[in-house]
Image (tube, each protein chain N blue to C red):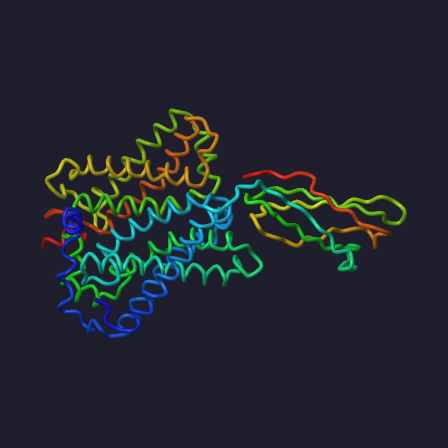
Length: 319
Length: 124
């Protein structure tokens, strides 16, 4: 079942990629290098939120179960990201789960060390406060660790693993692209969801402004992914499904971005006691950031067809 | 599946870290008594000392409830040079089961007892 799901998401080719790996699989130094790269990627992505005051506060302000929900969503996305670009590519479904656990555990260790180094946790604090802060910071760091392999690895590693870095593009289908879009939307939106700015913007915006923002978010992200000729972009349909065209995929990605925004606003208590119009305003405003994240995520995995993107990864994949 | 000691160690530490974080949140959430925020303050008059601004008296502020408190307003009062003088302090956030140290300032060393009380606080 899990293999079918991975195949449906276009993630099923990972197991074929290790034959030409430069360093033997059982090399301890290679494993250590992978872990260091994952930790570095986690820090690169997680640093802004490690320095965000609201994230420290939400560590002890959020109820236990909301933090657990966020960690659960993160784990699911990390599994998907690991399938696409994790720091070990030759794996079965069990190995994929084990690697995802390892990514989350690494994120916990890195978050703990970083918060200790910044003086945000210490022995004089209550355990609930310490664990809450670590748990929240695990989210961006785990995303960064997942992305560390293909996007941050040395070119020779990627090439030897996959034949070419564009191999990933060819492997990622529409569902996979939208999955990555959801993860990237979560990551981008998380950077501002904990702050008060989306709430202020959403409450103060009128309905016409919100409609304009929605149209603008859709058009700009459509242009970024399909018409701006970014690396990883594509000007052609990426498959045969109804969501494979530029307009429909962008609409789906935007809808996912709004759902992700609502999830984050709810998690951080921004919807508590708010009227419907205030909630919608916040969702639309945070959705701007989330939709740009979703666009960046889709660019990251590419997936363009034969006429894709003029030199983008999609084009390379088919060439 | 796992081929070398580095990966075994990494996996072991990862499992421990996740069990610690998720396990604590789950158990603490289930066993939480749900009591409201209960901030309280206790002075340490013997710990007072002179500064360029006058005399400061330390106090510890605790929250013994299960919920965090925000914008906790504290007021200390004492007789200084024959007159009643008050000193106030506001804490942004105080997590559950946590303690912070604050300092109340007076023009000079207080005469007699210093009193402190929590004036108001909010619940986030």
